[in-house]
Image (tube, rainbow over all chains, first blue to last red; front, side, top):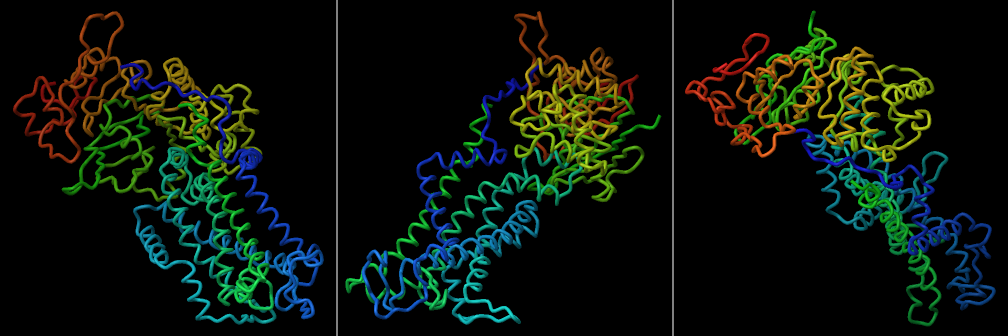
Length: 316
Length: 318
């Protein structure tokens, strides 16, 4: 009965691409794939556009110049001008700010709520808490995000909310709303990975060593759930940008005259078939490339962080 | 001398189609200070459940439904959760079968060792790091200071089990529960790990509850052995007595199932039949259906564990 299981001692060959140990390696792997590189470059370009808009935008995005309205792209207006003579390139660069702000902040809010709820539900699987959280998530999930957003903004209204000296523009409401609407989606993703990780041997081992639930959740387990969350967060930024553009398009997002890609598209509606193609095309390209960029980056991250590939380094 | 660990009539049950099914059906077992006790039995006999119950770590929906577990005279089953956490790792430690998955892949070995030490000793992480290096050198890991910065995947299976043993003994517990600690390792590494546990036993005055299905390891390592079958202890005896005069028919059958070197051309024994499924009602002895010397009485009355010489046997025929 000696080596009863007949198990062969596993041998580690080479360096396993251990999650987390090296962020540098992660970046290298993502940029090493062609699509990942394209995604990263697109995202980088949008981020730079948003950060540097005041510096690189050739014109004031709000400056009306009726003499120069509806000009086609030219050396002085690289993307032409709109019906009020505003420079489309400048407006698009400033528009990147709102888009990214909504995308990133909404995901941050969604992560804060979703990770906490999802972790609790996954860790205490089988409890009443799990049922309460996950059924509420299911209920919220049954209505599409954009429908929720339009309904809520439609009811609350698009005016700024004034809290003492601070006036929160409609974007703030959109951010909060989209963020809250992300909570169920992120809670689900977190739940599924935490559910699996909570049963891992190392969790049992840590418990045996006297670790409490909070310690297990906050450090041990979450650390191993990071990769799917990173992937999802990246993809959700893209969705947030689309939601913001959609809301602005129907007039429920960024309010004029502030530039935003969605409202620029809405303004361009009347010119699609009358020859002024640059009005809809350039804001549309900004939206497309940004969303494609985040999606490619997210896909590349998923490929690199895929648990099956992570394990591939271990020959067991 | 008072026993370090006293388990009395421990019962653990799981919900089952028809009410609760008992997976552990009245285990009674003592571990004396400094003693190594083997707990043997086939898969599903309740060895690991018994051990987890000592740590109060039976996962829901399983539940301890009866009996008592005393550690240093203190009833474990009535401790609060916080008291349980102080017990785990500091007083009683446990190591598991699979060293590959028992370490968190995302953290360095040093960080995981430091976490354990800080949890129980409340010292600064800097001091704990020094202590962690010490622990690694005690369990025989070369260049411990450098290895602290390594991730689990950079260690071999045997090395990882050493690390886990180090974590288990880092806070000087008095009882180490080793649940099949060498099953996932190859034979030479197995011997090294056993030698390590034996050395730590002497150096730290550890008591060991050694769970295994490998009788050779028991013979080599343990002072006393309890043989479990279908959730109950069938026989408990000093190791030597168990192997020289096994009194329970199940023990005898188990010993016959171990292949011996030099016995060529002999068919290896196996025990006919299968253990009763958990949840099936057992009026008599759990082993009755497979027992070669079964009597009428065995089907209706469960034999209690009673003393026969230095041994204790649950068999009407003993």
